[in-house]
Image 1 (cartoon, rainbow over the protein chains, first blue to last red):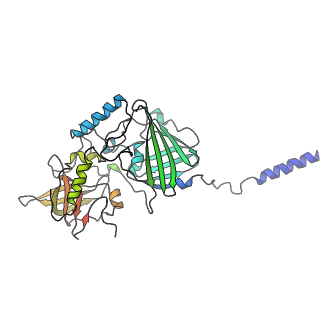
Image 2 (cartoon, rainbow over the protein chains, first blue to last red; image 1 turned 120 degrees about the horizontal axis):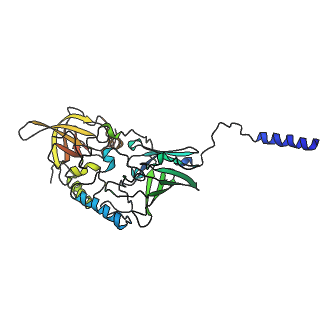
Image 3 (cartoon, each protein chain N blue to C red; image 1 turned 60 degrees about the horizontal axis):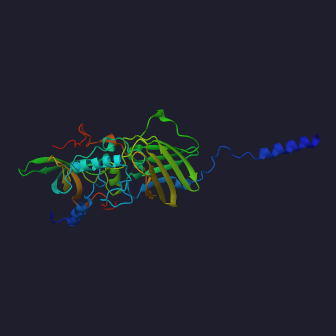
Amino acid sequence: MMKRRALLILLASVLACQTPANAAEPAALPRSGMNGIWSGEQGVLWDTSVKPGQKPRAPFTPEYAAIYQEALDASARGQPKADPPAGCLPPGVPRIMASPFPFEIVQTPEITYILYEYMSQIRRVYMTGAAPAAMGLPTFNGRSTGKWEGATLVIETTDMNPLSVLDTTHLPTSDALKVTERLRLLAPDRLEATITLTDPKAYTEPWTVVRTYKRKQGEQILEYVCEENNRNPVQEDGSTGFIGAQ
Amino acid sequence: MALRGFPGIRSAALLLALLTSFPIAAHHSFAIFDRDVQITLTGTVKAFQWTNPHVFIQLMVKNAEGVDEEWSIEGASPNMLFRSGWTNQSFKPGDKVTIVANPLRDGKHGANFVFAQLPDGKTLGQLNSRAPG
């Protein structure tokens, strides 16, 4: 009996010694090298695999090929379809990953935040469970969950607002769109995002593009308030205005 | 389209022609400008709007009758321009400048900034202007 009690006391004291000395310190995040400010290296057109001036290689379904052609024709007539950001609507996911303005990655154990300069957009990537339901409605930035596969951050995003397009050529997606982003460091100052769009209504197969981002010395996130002095509002007929020219 | 005194204008025009085979990165509002045409506006700065989403230079330009007309010349976001060496002092009221720009298709006095010749003689572009001092 004494031996067993002594054993229990010994066990208890051993366990007590395992308590972290300073429980208030957060554990170091596993991939903090991905934190910081990143500036895109490709242009704003979605398909980074083609040269500016070439048509994007979207594997459109017939219906969506026609929708896109209609947008190209309208543009050729000098009456391009209104681009949502022209009216200060956010670009949405995944287009915001093609932003010519930088973004900042901030990791916490439960959420990876991506803070964008453009229109002060914030994405919350939920790392330990499902993303909240967000009133059950689509949103511009969608609902994102993330997990690490080795050193690659894999983000899955669903429930995006189908009003958004992929770039200024009015590249369409549908309400069935799912986005998978695989983020990894190529070097301490270079981030790569492999972005796959899966959209059975719009595309006959998953469509992947690759973008890279540089960490620039001394970069900061500036403010961008679209409504500050927007002199190019979208008119009722969908055309773009120019306020103040007589 | 030769513009004497502006070296590089021909190459800029050629580049533009190559890039317009498919609607490129163009910003939403570019459709309202005629990007095949460049006009030269020489005048005095009335105001410089260093704001998002686009900066504007308000320029007083004498018309054929010698009467001042106000032109609104639109540029990129100040965030981009700041990273390219511009500041909110790049144009000041009273500055005498020459600006090359693409005019509005509807003929009104608005245009899209291409580059400027500044009072100190330097040329100021948007993406690769002179480095900050």
